[in-house]
Image 1 (cartoon, rainbow, N blue to C red):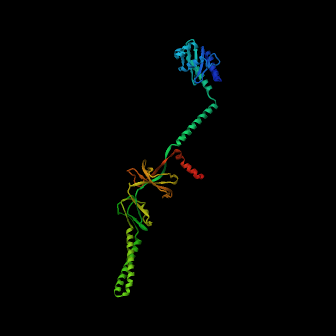
Image 2: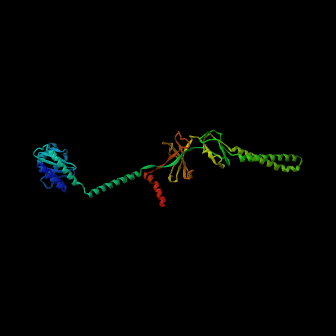
Image 3: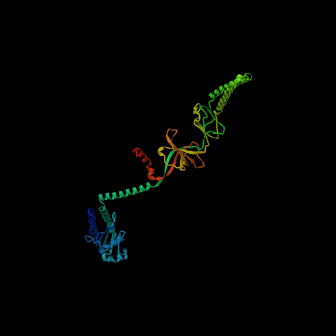
Length: 426
């Protein structure tokens, strides 16, 4: 055994052009480094590649079949003997091979070199054989490496399988039913407020309550300016006094002058008209002082904006509501409108407590869109709060309204499909 022989074998292994040439070198020329009587190179999945002393092993020969069974049983590198075999293979060992074998797996390749000789293997042979096995394994793995075309085809096949799997998974995922939901700005409003309106045309002279103030039934809320009405009432009183004086005068004349009796009926009618007009003006003077029809919280805008503001009859000035007798009002934009049934689930995420959603049930959605205070057009929706601890009046947030179940693909593509249809006109 010499270093020159080892270097020569390593050089020959690197120069091998095919796996068959490398196998021939391994089983026939390794003897120049370490003496042996027989050698065989076996590769997993391919069987015997080469046997020393023959150009090509016969695939169905008894020796070849027996040797392949032996190679499949061996695992651990190192010296082997017939005692390591199964009983059937052990009986034929002495018939086919010398008594002392050495099993040498090739790293980086699913192959191994079997060497057999008459004398025992020495401990100093193991490092040399390990170095030789490393070289043979590296060379065989390099020769078994597929070509660029084969690698490209394998990768393309893998990509096709991958994309096919992705496509199947996407189709399956697209059919998964999910709830169709929309988001809308929402506000906590009074469920049944008492709307306080202007009883007649006039100018607001003063407010007797502040925003969010609790009022009792019959308490003064606001009043209108009474200058015009009082002037008219004073004129009506004077006109009534004049009519009554004329009535007394004509009544006295009618006692002595029969010609005055026909005038009496006209004067009485005029007097009743003046009295009725005065009563009407007095009733208007009483109505300009608007009082609370029920107890509740006063809901109104900035009071300073109402002082001196002219109002028309029926115009809303404020509302009275219970602070916790509330429900949800949401505004759905026409683009987000979906099919919603009464009783649909509604979840409200209030700005003051976004991590504590409030559950509600839809009571109705307006059939027609209306103009909101911010000049946008939207559908008004109302929902009944299911929780006992209802949020207070005036809180705002975002409402999630749930419709029916739809496939995931429709949920993802609903808006894009609508935009495309609007663009192409189909």
